Image (cartoon, rainbow, N blue to C red; front, side, top):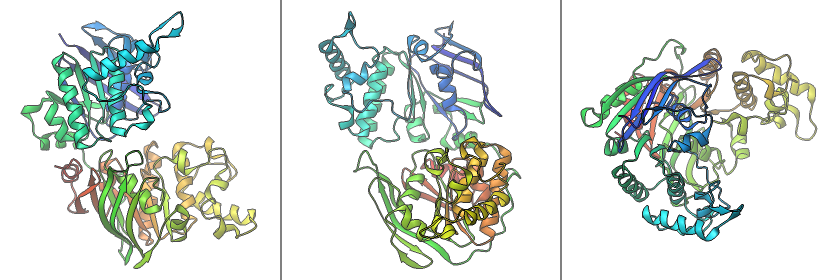
Length: 502
């Protein structure tokens, strides 16, 4: 009898089938890893299990202890003994460790919280988990690794029999990972079943009884961990060819446009933890340099540190056009000819309440409109150029950006940076969350810009995108550069092997 069985789960979003008949089982005391590329459907499947996507929003069946389960929300899932620790921590940093552990479940009588009982229970739980953490200290005073362990204690406070961990070691040091694995082994011995989502195959093979591979929202295969190799898992994860959605690159490479030497960036929450460790590279005029790597590899932190936007500590040497350059802030980067299409367009790329015109001219306003007095006519004429070339679907430049589709919003962000006349353009996940048609248009624009001599640095979690657009690819794993391939050398297996540190 399985502890958990998920049968033929189908989950659709507008225009996208995120899960297409996925099935998954978990036994008592089993460590079952769930692996796949970014976007394969792992987190979506777990959100179905956790009640984030309640019954009625998906098709298929969930059985716990062979009994059909109907989760109308997160509390129903928790009541069934399921605890999920998502990659983004859900702790309230202004509250104490004990308050966080029992948040919403505080011991009380007649509506009054019994604080001594709360902290007594928290102390016992932390002691059982062998975590030397004072339950009365505020969570915000702890390092990110200890916060992750508090998150696990919080999940276990509800007597979970199924524990789901989504990339739990992304922010942990090696010693913290060992502490975590010690805790997990104790829980497995007690019969807790675990679903473990991770890109770190060393960890997956160290702990797993079984491994299930998802690809494109489907279950590809399930293996006993001892009966398959890392190479076999990588091949199952990749398993598809780069299609003709990508333009055939015909780029004439020029001089070195950007050279980075010894870039190191540190965590904002843990100043001793290196997120990028001594990375050096260069990109030439007319070249698309792809940066591949899995979640937590340090790709975005790398670009933000070059651009002067990373809020943690960082150091590096920069040359632009063969000359040393000092970049301390995004305004320095813009003045030096560097543009940056950021990963999160809604937070960092657009002012959604403003018009296309205001958004598109924002970064290059002084060049377009003058230093002291804005020239609205000149701004409007400037914005119409990218609107035509990028085929932005809007009635006029005065359309509010927030009313556009995701693909058209992304084109506005791209147009904004093109109006700064950059020498180097950073593209961080340039097609995330947009449909295939808009993707193809952006791919064509990237190819066109490179043919015109622009140096482009592309970060993407979609491996086919990196392979299909790049002239050369460098690969990061846990902040270090683990591979470099020309277009002809790069294969999905080689890149994925380097990305997993294998």
